[in-house]
Image (cartoon, rainbow over all chains, first blue to last red):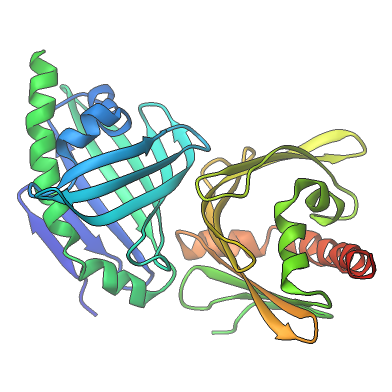
Length: 167
Length: 167
C-alpha cells in the first residue's frame, strides 16, 4: 500500500496507510514563542491562515483549555465556509489539542494535536496530527484540497513571522 | 486477529481490530429525551456516571457546542482522578461530539461521538464511538478497567431512568 503524500517546499502532508491519521510537518525561521503567538492571537491568525484567496471573519478565537473557535471563510466578500471547534487542552508555547469541523459537512470531525519543537537557532518545527474516525474520512480529508490552504497559509506565516522577528 | 469484546448483560464494548476506535452500545428502557437529559443535566449525571464506588464532584458541565466539562472522581472523599473535555458540537436529543481526557495522563485524549437512536416503544439505543490516535492508545483504553464504570454506571442509569419514566 502506498502512502499518499504531498510534499511541497518545506511542508509534509502524510496520511498513515494503516490508521486514519494525517501528519503535517513544517519548519519556520522563527522561535517557538512567535509561532505560538501566531496561532493563538486572532489578529495574527487572520493574517496568514488558509488560502490566499480567502479572508477570515473570526467570531471566536478562545485558545484556552475548554475554549472554542469559530470563523467564516470569505472569498471576494462571499461566505464560502464556516469552521469551528473546541479546545481540549492548551500547553502554552508547546501544544494545542482541539477539534476541527465545518458547518458544510457537520458529520465530519477531526481531533488535532499541534506541537511546537524548538530546533535551536531561532527555528521551530510545527507538527500536527489529525485523527479521524475511518479510513474513508481520512481519504476525504486528503482529497479536500486542504494542501492549498496549508501551503499558501504557511507561506504567509513565513512572511508574518519574518516581520515579527525583525520587529 | 480477534476483536477484544466485553459483553455483559446489555452492554457491548468493542475495539476495532484494524483502526484505533472503540464502540460502546447499550439500550435503555426510556425514551430518547430522558436519556439525553441524563447526559446533559449535571444534577442527573452525578447520580449515575462512573463506578458505584465513585462520587463525582462536577466543576463544569456545559453541554453546548463550544462548551466544556470538568469533574473530580472521589472515593470515600479522596480525590482519585480529574476528568475534563471540550464539546465540539451538540445536536439536542440526538448526538454529542466531545473530547475526553484526565489530568493523571495528560497526553491521552479521545474524540467521542455519542448518538441516541429511538427504538420505539419508549426505548433508546446509545452508541458511543471513541477515536484515539494509535493502536497502542486503543489497547491502553481497553486495559484501563473502564468497563467497571461503564457497566455499573449504566446499571445506575437504568434505575434513574426508571424513576424518571414513572415520575
